Structure formats: C-alpha cells, structure tokens
Image (cartoon, rainbow, N blue to C red; front, top):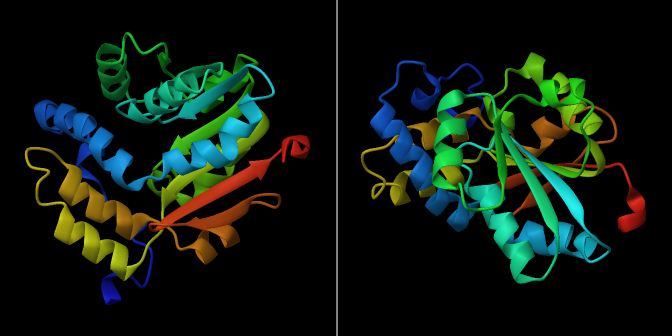
Length: 232
C-alpha cells in the first residue's frame, strides 16, 4: 500500500491539538481501555517481562505518557492478583490526560502526575521498570534519542516501550474493526497512528546502541533496554 511505504512523520492526530473537542477527547481516553486490552499485548508483556522480576521482591514502575491511565491500572491489578508488590507512578505532560486519569482511577492505587520524564530525572527519581504505550510514534524523530536517554536514566532495570508496527495489514484491520468507536478520536487518530509508526527495521536503525527491537503479535514493536541482566 503506497500510503504506508514511508512513515508519515508529520501527520497530526486530532486529539493532540490544543483546541480539540474536550467531550470527544474524554471519550477517547475512556475507549483506550478497550483498545489497549484488545490489541496492545500488555498481558503477555506482564507475564514474560514483569512477573518473574516481581517474584524477587517489591518493585517500582514508571509509565511515561500514560494517557487515560488504563495501562498502569491493568498492570497494578495483575500484580495484586498474583500477590506481588508493584508501586506504579504514571505521568503525562498533557494536563487533560493527567486530569482524566487521576479522576477516573483515583481508587486504583496508581500515582498519577502531570509531568515529563525529564522533570522526574531532574528530581533524581529512579524506578525498577520503565514503560510507555504508543508514545514513540508521537515523537518527532529528533526528540526520540532524548526521550530514550531520559527513560534509561530513570530506570535501574528494564525499559520497555510498546508501540505500533506499521504495515498494510495493520491499517486494513484497524480500518475494518474500528467502526464501533464512535463519538471519539479513536478511529481517525488510530489510522494516523499506524501511518506514523515505525517498522521494526526503521525503529532499530533509529534507536541508540544497546536498545533492541522485539516484534510481537499483533503488529507491535517493543523497544527494550536491559540495564540489569541479572534478572534475565
């Protein structure tokens, strides 16, 4: 598909615009929970990457760019069900996202903050695990190295950035399956997100040394940095 041959680095998602409809934006944040549970693959990531580490004792996790907050809440619930101790901080620089997440998940046990990774780094914070979901494709290419450096600086163990992997099949399937998500920006911005996302080869070529791209189903890239290999 010619539309997806090259990364649409300069395409704009409606929900990122300062003047977008606040009602549609809140509905988008709410619908993220359904989309992420269906296609983001965090359950498998938790089982393979996080649960073995948590069995060694309590751990801390930072979610950068948490949006509506559903991913850190899922991770917190899974850890609690397994009887494991995971203290989670979730940040987003957008005050709209931070407000929505804090209000919607106030009883979740997750700490939500309006902040950037750079601000936490200046504060001297560090975490055992650092993650993001659907953040990489939003960043201008010249900002990606700094973002990765900040996430690495904040982490004592493992960093996992989970993002879309661009392909005609991903675009076609999302186009066909996203009709039910009405009244939000999910459909139009989701298609734009796929166009903006990296192939595995593109992401590996862009990432600094030490970072590894892992292809996962369906249509996912995990960009991983292991700072402490003693945990496997």
